[in-house]
Amino acid sequence: MDQRRFISRKNEVVLLNGNVVVKSFKDTKNFDIEYQMLSLLSGFLSPKIIETKDNSIKMEYVKGDLLLDRYLCADTEEGAVLGKMLGNSVEALFCRMQSKIAFDENFRNYIVCGDSIFRVDFEETKQGKIEEWCAKIVSFAILYSAPFETKISFINSLVGEVCIARDEFLNLLQEEIVFLSGRWGVDLNNTDYFFILNDLMSKWKRQGKKD
Ligand SMILES: Nc1ncnc2c1ncn2[C@@H]1O[C@H](COP(=O)(O)OP(=O)(O)O)[C@@H](O)[C@H]1O
Ligand SMILES: [Mg+2]
Image (cartoon, rainbow, N blue to C red; front, side, top):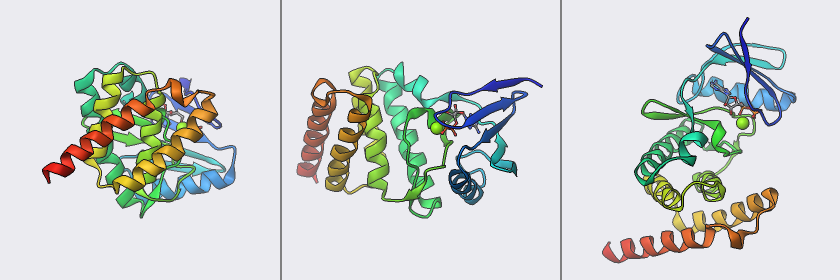
């Protein structure tokens, strides 16, 4: 049998014969949460379950590019397209997931599949707000080493696509990015955060004046 192991943070995730993924969970609680969410979504922007056994889920292989790979080398135009696609997916998933949010927003958890972005990895799903979900995504988008203009267009396009309370989003973004930069051992002053924040706020101010 042909087997390929994916990069996985804490579980064992393998691709079998190029068409089925088996994810074996270290933790029963995480298995339960992912099983519940994948069942609820039943293939909507997420892999369909084929079978479960002990603490593992056999699921459909979602063919496509990792969002991370696409994002890191995207130009401004592609950044905007990816941001819009991700915004659409997140809003639709949030709705189907009954106001729950996926927790770990690293871009390996998203697969660009045709015109849509699919989500894998639901093991840490919890009750939350769409503003928190977007703040987590934008924190990763800022800290990854994509071109600055790509980040700006991706983030503008993403937040323009999702219906969010802006003040709440900005407060949560501050919280999330302080947490994430701390975890990565990065000094926030050496990142694009403050430039991107200024850009976003001045765009929103201009838009507000036009309304
Ligand atoms: N159904 C799937 N289709 C395609 N790739 C998948 C699928 N499930 C997982 N992967 C790949 O395996 C990696 C790890 O899976 P993930 O569910 O995120 O586990 P972990 O949380 O342990 O990292 C993902 O980043 C992705 O590349
Ligand atoms: Mg993952």
